[in-house]
Length: 597
Image 1 (spheres, rainbow, N blue to C red):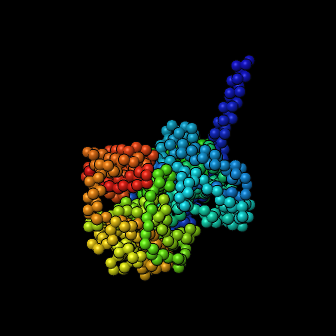
Image 2: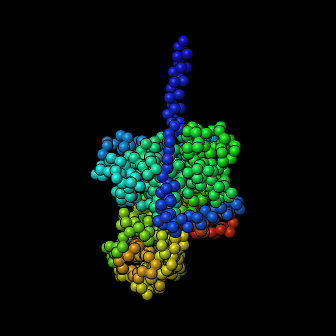
Image 3: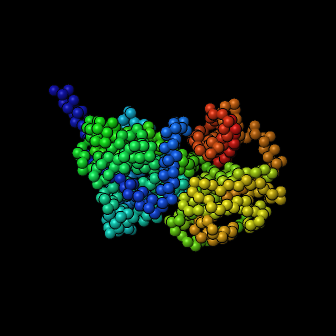
C-alpha cells in the first residue's frame, strides 16, 4: 500500500510539472511583428528594398550551395539590456518582475536557442547560434547587471492599459516607453517587458523589428516573459530575419501560401513545410501533430511545433534552414552587436587629452531621418554607433576620454597610408567628411586637414579614404579626428551646426618611423599578433581578454571572449586570404594586426 501511494504521489507531481511545463500548448499566442513591419516598410520603403535585395542574394547563395560554406559553428553572443517597465507595483510582482525572474527567463531562452531539452526543445531541433549575455556596462560606463527599471507609474494610460501602437485611448505607444530609456541599439539589444501589449487585432505577446532597419528592439508582454514560454526566442527569430512559418497565407480565406520558390516565397526557408496559421478558423483549436497538413496533403512534419509558428502545440524546434538564414542575417546586419564590448569584463582604455575644439550645441532639424554615422574603422579604431536619434539627441558624440563601449583611439604611421572607412546612417543619401587636426591648434582646415569628403553615400555602402599624414603633422601627441555624417547636399564644415545628421570625435596619434622601429624591436617583451604557419597567434605579457578575427570584407570569423591567457591561437584553413585580428588585453590595451595567408 505504501509503495502504491508513493507511485501515485509521483504521478501526480509529474503530471503537475508537465502540465505547467507544456502549458504553452493551451494558450492562443499572437505576435505583432507582421503588422509592425508592414507599417514600418510603408514609412521607410528604402528599408524594404534593402531587405528584398538581401533576400534575393540569400536565395542565389542557397540555390548555388554557397550559403552553408560561408557559415561556421560559432555561437555569437548578443549583449542585451532588459528594461522592466513598472506601473508602480513592487519589484517581484507580476507587473514588475524581479531580477531573478528576468535572469531565469533569459537563461531559459538561451536553452531554446541551443536546442536544450531543459528548455523543452526537441532532440531534432537545429541550434540557433546565438546566446544572450547581459550587459555589464551601461552607456555611462557604470557597472550594470543588464536589467534596467523604468518607472512608468507617471503615465496613467500605461498604468491602466499598457502599450498599444494602434489605439492610445487607454494605452501609450511603444515610442513613449523607449523615450524613457533606450540604450545604444548598435551596442545593446533592447528588450522591453511591459504589463500589457495590445493592438487593433487584440492581445499580443510580443513584437520585434527585422534586422538592418532604423528601429531595432523588442517588446514583450509580462505574461509571455517567463520560463516555459518560447515567445522571446520567437521574437528574436524575427530580429534575425525569420518569418512566421505561415508567411504568405491568406488571412481571410485561410488559403495556403504560394511556395513555388521556397527561397523567395512563404517564410523564405526550404526545410519548413508550407502551412497556414494554425490559429485560423479553418483549423481545429488543438495541437495538430498527427493530423493532415492541408497545404501538403501529408501529416504535419514538425511545422506545427516550430518556434516561428502560430500553433496550439508546444513550440520545440527550429530547422537547419532557419538557423542558416538567421546566421546569414546576423552576419550581414548585426556586426555591431556581435562586436560590442558592453558585456566584456575588460576595461577599454580610450583616455586621451586633446586640444579643445569647437563642438556643436544643437541640431537644426531633429527628427526620424536616420542620418549620421553607424561605424568608423581607422587603424585600431573599430567603433559602431547609432545614427542621430531624436530620443537620445545624439547629434554630437565625443568618443574620446572615458568612452568605454568601443575602440576609439589609434596610432597610425607618419609616412604611410592608413585606410579610413565610415558607414552612413540607415536611411537617406549622405555626405561624409572627416578631419584630423594635424597641427593640434584646435581648428580644422578645409584645405590641409580634410582627409575624407564623399557625397552620395547610401546605406550598405561606405565612404573610404587612404590617409597619409603630412610631413609637418604633430607626432606622438593625441590629435582630434572629427567625422561627420549629414544629409547629402548639405553644406558641411568642421564647426557647422548639424542639420539632420551627426558629428563624432576620435583620438589619433601619429608615430614617427623611428619610434615604430623601437617598438618593433621590443616586441619580444610586449604584446603581438603574428602569423605562425597556419595559425593566427596572439602573445602578450598581459592576459588576453578577447580576440576578434575578420576577413577582408569585414565579416566576423571569430569572437572569443574571457580567454584569460597570455597566448591564443586560431587555425586558418583557407589560402590566399587577408584577415585582421584584434585583441583586447585585460589591462585595457588593444592591438590589431592584418595578416595574409
